Image 1 (tube, rainbow, N blue to C red):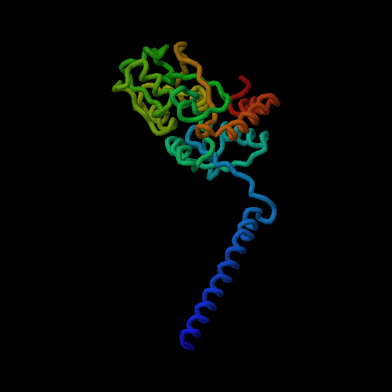
Image 2: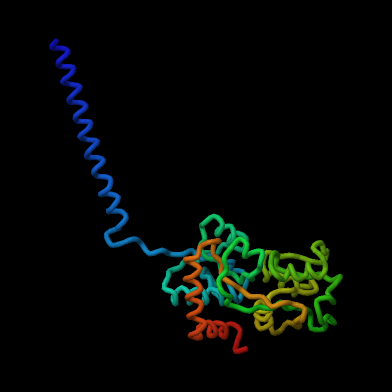
Length: 269
C-alpha cells in the first residue's frame, strides 16, 4: 500500500508540474507576439521592389553601379509624389516579368509598351510616355519605308514592339530578322555592318543619333507604324498599389515634373 501511495503521489506531482509549465508557456506566447508586431512603434513601412532592365538607354541604364535614366527618374518622382518608398533591382527583361509572377518584384518599369496581350496578365498604369517606331539606316540608303527593307538584315531587340512590327511586315519566320538581348547590341552590329537596319523605339534611336554624331546614318518614320504608349506594371489584381502609382503619375503630369524629365533626356520637342 505504501509503495502504491508513493507512486500515486509521484504521479500527481508530475502531472501538476507539467500543467503549471504548460500554462506558463501558453500565457507567454501572446505577449511575445504582440511585442513583435508592434516593434515598439508600429509596423515597418512597406518598401516596394521596382524591377527594370537597365540596358535600354536613355530610359534605363547603368552608370557605374547605379541605375539611372528617364524611367528611373519618372518612377522616383511618382513614388515621392504619392508618398511611398521604393528600392531598385536590375532584373533584366524576362526576369522582370517572372519576378512579378513570383512576387519578388512589386513594380515593373522598363519602357514596357501597353499591349492587350500583356494586359491579360498584368495591370498597367496610365501611360507615361508616347513612343513611335523608327528605322535606322545608313545615310546613303535608298530606304524610305519599312517595306523597302524586304530581303535585308534587320536588327531588333527580341520580344519588343520592333520585333513584332518586322514580323507583321515580313512574316514570323523572316530569315533577315535578327533579335538581340538588348538594343545597344543591335545598334553596335548596325554600326559594324552586320545588319542593314535597326527598327526600334524612337527614344532609343534618337539617343544614339545624338551620341554618335560622327556616324553617317538617318532615321525614317513609317506612317504605317502605330503609336504606342509605355506603362508601369503590377501583378494582376494589385489595385491598391496601382492606385498609388496612378495618383503619383497624375500629380507629376499636372505639376510639370513629367515634362521636365522628358526635356532632360530628349530636349524641348
